[in-house]
Image (cartoon, rainbow, N blue to C red; front, side):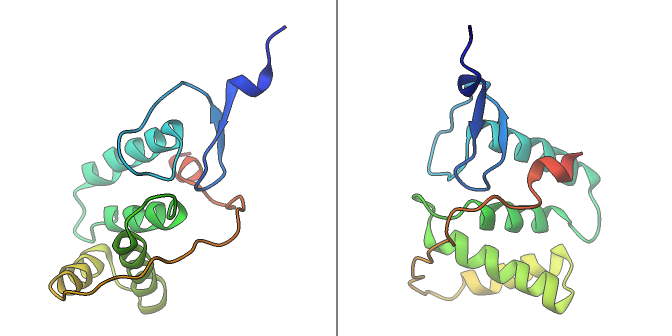
Length: 131
């Protein structure tokens, strides 16, 4: 009898449970290889759109925010949260958010590590967006 727990892997970042395909990641990502593969699929779609508003920036910021912690660079979390703030609260499109990131990157600042909230499963993940 097979152990069903070995067939499922839970992403440490967003909590999504996917079939374990034994994907491994190189580098510091707070994600399962399976979740990151879904993000890669989404990236192919958003980059392929070549839209003027550059929706790809929003997918980068959302995914990075959900997967912050566990070795991610503090600047990654800070920029992602700032990008989402400008998108959601100020109505910036992806190009405008990208410009904010560019302007921020010119300032030398020692970004403090931000602690992600307690482990929780997000109601919307990269898998939902792909579907």
